[in-house]
Amino acid sequence: MDKIEITGGVRLHGEVTVSGAKNAVLPLMTAAILSSGENVIGNVPHLRDVMTMGKLLAHLGFGFHIEDNSILLLTKKLTSFDAPYDFVKTMRASVLVLGPLLARTGRAKVSLPGGCAIGARPINLHIMGLEKMGAKITLSEGYIEAKARRLRGATVYFDMPTVTGTENLMMAATLADGTTVLENAACEPEVTDLADALISMGADIQGAGTSVIKINGVAGLEPLNYAAIPDRIETATFIAAAAVTKGDVKINKCRPEHLDAVINKMQEAGVKIKQKTGKLMVRGAERLSAVDIKTVPYPGFPTDMQAQFMTMMSIADGTSLITENIFENRFMHVAELRRMGADIKVEGSTATVKGVGSLKGAPVMATDLRASASLVVAGLAAEGTTVIDRVYHLDRGYEKIEEKLEKLGARIRRVK
Image (cartoon, rainbow, N blue to C red; front, side):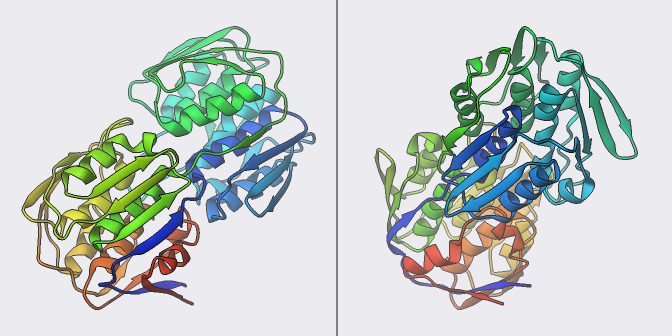
């Protein structure tokens, strides 16, 4: 099992290029199910989750080929309607095949995702929406089985915004009979990106990026030819890395407009950030200032940056309060940061972080994707050497992060 070794204390300097967003690419791959032909997706990061989704689509009978940063999906031949547990257990985004399969073929069988390290993420809202659209759904032996001769338009209200739920129903609605309205829909940039891609295929979608999305069903969609947006969380992670190392870093091929809440909090903490179209210039402060954050759905502060920001606050002047409102079990990185000398106390959904003079290198263990990113940031800031175990979590969401950081001057290497 790979580990990452970091000797901290080096100011990062130079330029780094952001990869495409995994959370945009995976829905785009499932959107290809809605067409029959050659689909091309660009700006694709080489990540484990992308390969897992490719294997799932190949299981359905599609041709899957990845070269450089592009994917070719051949979706003419469909030989299966099921997403087995072996795929879904390793990647919850596999459930995104449910809506497109049902819309195209009238049937789908998808394994229930099961547990998750950062808390429960139920798909009852997906099921509720599809039932309102006329699907007959049964749950049997850990699988969702859905059937519908043709889905029909409906008004669906989400009790809480759900990104994958919004994406699943939006894709299903593109081929439904009539008009579907999704209320209290997720507003994340990845949802808007999927909507833009579907529109390029011939879908009729209005309101993506707002809490109300209207989809008028069409008879069919053309194959997809589309490039995914840059990864906003990778961008923000590089901002954090520059901040804790007092670095001077230029981040290329990013979308600063997707990070308003993060950039505002970073600047409040003392990080100097200049924005240009597709670029960010980041300079860390000699000493960060404590700032409170609360994670909320987009456009608020993202839960996927909570752990990295907590690392920053662990060496900031003063005391900060970090409240996690999205997932009930997303403080597992706290114990590892404490091993490195951080002063953090957790009560319920709030962590109280008292800044210390410096972190100390230590052996630590990643527990999920963003926790592993926070430990990389901590290792860059720490005195001495940090060894991060179970970095397969990191490989699910960050493309060659150790190589990118090494080019910025970090003393970092992957240990096989």
